[in-house]
Length: 235
Image (cartoon, rainbow, N blue to C red; front, side, top):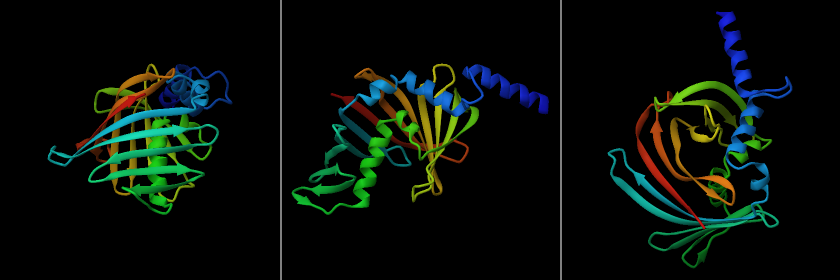
């Protein structure tokens, strides 16, 4: 058994194309994934991003619960700032600048809050995958090959952010052959959510998601029910 395990480990190293012992499997996979999505140079030079995000939420019976259309604007010139706008009964907006965020409901501006900051950070984090995997605060480990939705063979990276108050555990799934980011699963409290990247679009020489699907799943990744569909339209 030990010989078989050793052989499998060496095969993975060879498959990933690791050139030196100093290059970890995790680093190699992230490098290949970022390259598959347009590279680090194109992402670093991206100063402005504008897109519409259409969200359709479903209940456990599969009925539409809510439809939301948001407008996202981000700028890194020179420091990160941005807004997220949408409307339900009134117009709503989250504004981020100088490491704080506040919400505006109609004409009423609220004080800066952690809730508004969390919403902004979450949206920006999702947009900038896989490049955000380079964050130094992330603890990354390679879990090997796995199969998601019983059809797709993937490399699995587990991500933990020890500095965060909420100890969510993320798993990111990279296509076995071309290393693009095809899905992720997050364990938050007692729940698990699997989000698949169904279609991609080229935007400013970068490969971004254009359609995604979110499922509530169990700890084994088996689907319990469809939770949401997302569509991204870049400008």
